[in-house]
Length: 207
Image 1 (cartoon, rainbow, N blue to C red):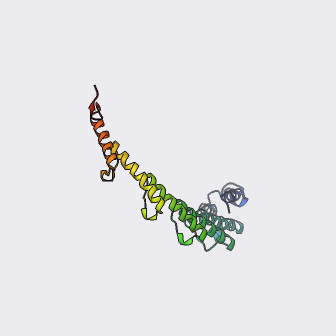
Image 2: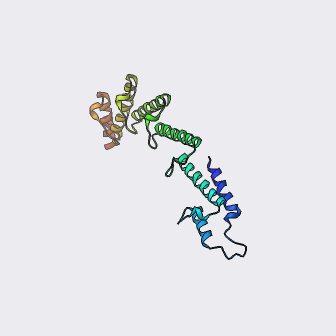
Image 3: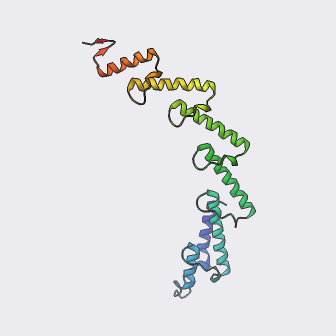
């Protein structure tokens, strides 16, 4: 059931003669029956379905059923599975599974990996591994080194060394001088000195 169908249903209800809020003489516009009908239609206030005409009551029930079905399908709002037909329940279950799979892939929303199929779990595991590797390489996000394979450990160590050297040279970010090689340490010292004394380069003052 698509949202467009539900919208069409609403327009159909509004257009049907039973929903007219004016009688022949125009004097029953605001009577209790019409007020009850409005309450049932809007879902506001007290609604007495028994006071409606049979076709009106059926339209209200159908509308509420479609509203609940739409909530079940899009995942927003409270979903009551009890009134769903067998085919609707299967459709809702399929949509819920799709949403869970998407949440596991994107880490947006609640992910229950126990609900994934074998192939889906394998795909999510690959995405998780690639995401972790990207975090380790870029320095953005949480990096779990224990998930890296030997070649990735070497690759990540090179990028971390480059980032650390840049931080030490620029003075921006965390700098671990102990991890610098002797050549890098001398280079950092020269950079720091030239920044502090712009006229001094390679130990000589520029005139």
